Amino acid sequence: MLSYWEKESFINYDYVIIGSGIVGLSTAISLKERQPTVRVLVLERGILPTGASTKNAGFACFGSLTELLADIEILGSEKTLELVNERWQGLQKLRSRIGDEALDYHGFGGYELIRKAELPYIEQIDKVNELLKPIFKDPVFSLVNKKSKAFGFNQKEIKALIFNKYEGQIHTGKMMRSLLAIAQQMGIEILTGAEVISFDDSSTRVSVQVKNTVTQQPVEFKCGKLAICTNAFTNQLVPNLDITPGRGIVLVTKPVPNLPFKGVFHIDKGYYYFRNEGNRVILGGGRNLDFEGENTAEFKINERIETELKRQLKEIILPDVPFEVDHVWAGIMAFGANKAPIYKAHSEKVFLGVRLGGMGVAIGSRMGEKLAEKML
Ligand SMILES: Cc1cc2nc3c(=O)[nH]c(=O)nc-3n(C[C@H](O)[C@H](O)[C@H](O)COP(=O)(O)OP(=O)(O)OC[C@H]3O[C@@H](n4cnc5c(N)ncnc54)[C@H](O)[C@@H]3O)c2cc1C
Image (cartoon, rainbow, N blue to C red; front, side, top):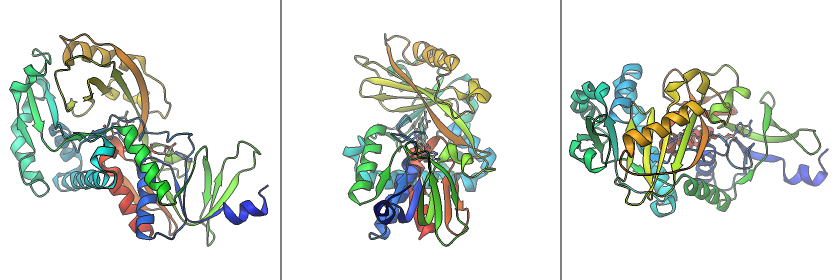
């Protein structure tokens, strides 16, 4: 049972946001930027944000050539262009909000490693560059095959290398700490260990029930409007949305002396990705080895995928350089029939910004901005 004081001071808000990932925090910050006097509460079930935002690989990217061609097949050219534009705008928003130094942003560019199977895609570089012209003045993708040898990749496997000068990399931990700090400086309240179990929007004010592990009696928060930013975990609150959780496995090596490359790298339509982090290598992916098994919200390591990641590192990425794997982790993404996020009003008072897919670092800030505008 709550005290009079708790009821007076802790329960009522103008806006409640569920989830403190990139989208939840960006939504809260965008709301406060537009209306500085409103009371905003973020409810996070984890001690830390516990989904994708603190677990990702820190690519500041908007789609490799083969990925965009796959998107065009499903979404069509116009919608793919729209999606790239949102990702690009989101990245600019993130960089201007946090600053490149605090983000540890490096614009080393991005590359796609082309194996024999992807060689036919190269013929479509001009077509995709033309499509992207309204966003980027210059051509986005160009062939830089000679660099592949200098980077030390296995030349028997890698037949071509595509460069994209607009891609960069960030330090994911610094990004999330910065977003939390900005939110707190603005007076946004954040409660962690606060799992929302249900909400009810049938009265004038929305009621949000939060699990209480101390008294076992849920705490009921009240707000004018509610934003659900729970990405892969949304079906527990709003069933029947087209959202499938997708686990991603990532590993990081110990520092590799004289690491021969810098930048972010994509292989096989984005199913594998790696980058330098200083002189370490971060490598992730492999969901396509076991789609069914990886459609899960469990933070476990799939050993088959871990083994394949280590094989790719040894045989393709660092064939001539000794390395040691330092750490392996898992994060949970959200996917659906296509890569466009779900961004909509669920009711007059409840709003959804979910299903961010594999490029939420890019699109997350833009999603928060749009969601805030919809809520206001
Ligand atoms: C392994 C991996 C690598 C990735 N690499 C990249 C990359 O390099 N570049 C890129 O752009 N994107 C990448 N992504 C994708 C990107 O991280 C996500 O798209 C983005 O972080 C999604 O942000 P979000 O805020 O929507 O979701 P999340 O970060 O998942 O946040 C949702 C939050 O909601 C909380 N929550 C859930 N249910 C409840 C509840 N009932 N009550 C309270 N809180 C709740 C969760 O604990 C979580 O903190 C990667 C993702 C993964 C998993």
